[in-house]
Length: 400
Image (cartoon, rainbow, N blue to C red; front, side):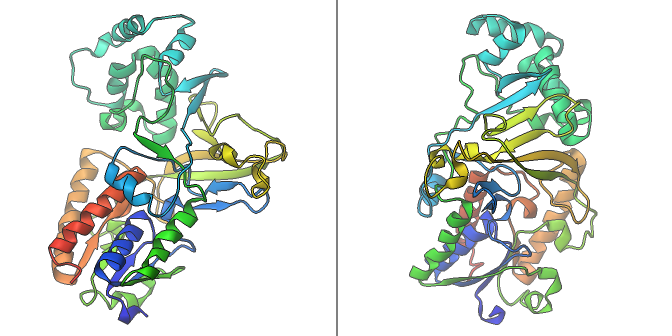
């Protein structure tokens, strides 16, 4: 099969599957997609827990949201979405507060009834120590956005758990987009569109693959296949155009050094209760809880509760699935989740990017996606990047 494909894609995640779908349906290419895992979808994959029938996001919560009309139109070809709106809460000093920081959080924290203008003035006063300076680290950036008391309560310790690094040593870009709202709106996202795939993530991605059955080309999937363990696949280098969506430093055998990542331990538990925490995601802002947050997945699909076809979602079922999320430093063999954004890592990635440019010219290999571009992307941005890259590579004749 390998020697008959027109395009080889390493990695069956969002980026790879989007390029595969476009190449098959628009260009009539016969695409082979391989993945070392036993499933499609990359980190966005979800599965139905065998004991409860609750859909669990295997690699941490994935919530689809976008304001990109092109992306929204594209993804709706392959799935319908629920009307889910994401909300997050955080526990601090044994009290639960709404996130992101909003007027409700502010008034609850200060035991006050500030108006929006009064709250703005308060935060301005509490951020005075960094007024007029360009933040050089995460702590200064956080204080400038929400003031010192709120930063120390909700961000400082949570961040130190997540990155295992003091806020003073982290890049300010990590929380530059931290929202603070002077209304009682605690919707987590502020995008035009938001929702979860009606029938689950795996079905969504399978629909992308199956769409090629009606087009000019084809998409073949080969799972449990490691590119680096297959001389046959590697022999296609320079012969068949190849998209590599794995870690770019791994492809070049870490020749310039390892790119650092943050990784996660996700500990799943079935709890004998109807409802464990009353919301999809609860953050834990204090150091006494070693986990950063707990996901309770039945809350992602309340439309399934009490339906005969979704027995595990009934509010009276008596069981629920939770996942505690722990952050850790990545090492080879762990799953890389978050790139570590520092001047040093950006300089290191630039070296790999130069190697990647040469690899495209010499061996018809291109790189993309979260791992291939050493970037943290929301899902909609992965789709946007893939669609844009497809047009770019189509124009420059890469797929020819």
